[in-house]
Length: 454
Image 1 (cartoon, rainbow, N blue to C red):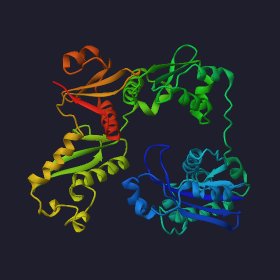
Image 2 (image 1 turned 45 degrees about the vertical axis):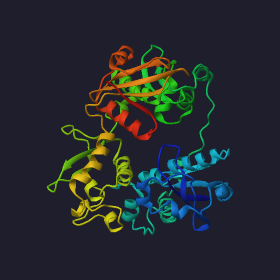
Image 3 (image 1 turned 30 degrees about the vertical axis):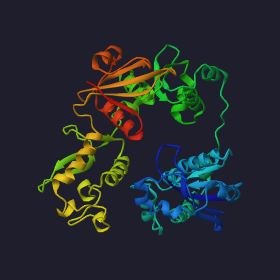
Image 4 (image 1 turned 135 degrees about the vertical axis):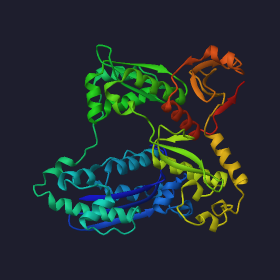
C-alpha cells in the first residue's frame, strides 16, 4: 500500500518552514482508496515568492486547521504504507519536522518518483514534475497546489509501476529510516565537542583536514555527519580520526572564518563550497526618464552590485519585500513586465513612477535609501555581535566599504574609533564571498547592532 503525498510550504530557512497545504492519496497499486486534502495554518509568514507561485496567502489560511489538529489523520492514513512523493526527501523532511515539533517521531518507508523516473524513463530533458508529466501526456490541474501535484504524481507512479516489469527497482528504491547507532570511536569524538557556535575541522589520522564546516551547535552538527547515510557522510565516517574546533560566538564570525578556511585549506569534501557562494545580484541604472531602476541579474564580475544573493529565488523574495517597504514601482524594479503601468499602480500602492506621474527626484530618494541601506560603499562601520563568553562581543570591521577583519572585546572596552578597533582586529581577506556573507547576514538579522565610526 502506498500514500502519495505533496506538500506546499511557507518557504524560508531550512527546517523552519511550515506546511500551508497537504494532499495525501492512499493508493493500492491500482486505484486511490482513501484521500486527505487540507489547507493548514502554518502560524508563520509565507514568503512572497511562494504566494506568487502557489496562490496561497495568509488570508486563505486564517481559519484553516493548525498542523496539530490534522496530525492524527496524517498518521492514520499513512500507517503501514510506503510514502511516495516527487522529491520525497523534501516532503518527508517537512513532515518529520512538523511532527518533531509536536514531540512525535514520524517514520515511514519512502519512495522518490524523481529517482525512479531517472531509472525507468531515462534520457528525459527534465525530471521536474511539470515537464515530466507534460512529456508523458499526464494532465495536471492546479499546478503548484498540493492536490493537483499529488494526483499527477499518482498517475506518474502508476506508469512507473507498469514500467518496472521485474519489480526490482521499486524494491531497491524503498528508503528505510537510517539506523543512527554510532560506533564507539565516533561517539567519543562527539562527546568531546561542545554545543557552541563555531567552525569545526574534520581531520584524517595524518592530520590532514578533509572537511570544514560551521554550526550554531558543533556537537549536534558532528553527530549529523557521523549518522548520515549519504556517500560523502559515509566517506567522512571511515576517514575521520579527530575533530578540532574554533569557538566564534557569532554565526556571522563563524561564516566568515569558515569561508576563509575553506579557501586556504581546500578540503577534499568541501569541493562545492570552494566556489563562489552567490549567483545573483542587484544592480541599478538610470533610465531615459531619470528614474533609478533596480534589476536582479546573474552576477557579472565587471559590474559593482548593490548586494548579492545565493539564488534568483532569494533575490526576488528580497525585492518583493523592499517594493512594499519603500513603496517602489514593480515595473522599475523588474518585478512586473509591462509597456505601461505596473499592477500596484492599478491598486493605488504605486505612486506612478512607471507612467511618470511621480517626479523622478521624489521616487529616486526612496530608491537611494534602499541602496544605501544594503551596500557599504565608502562606509566605516563596525558590526557588533555575540562573543565567545557572556561578557564578550565580536566586532566585524568595514572600512571605506571594505571588510577588514574580526576581533573580540570585553563589554567594558569602548570601541568608538578606528585606532581602538584596529588594535583588536585580526585582518582577513576582503572578497566577493565575504561581502555576500555580511550583507546576507544583515538582511536576515535586522536587529543586529551596527555602529558608524570615525
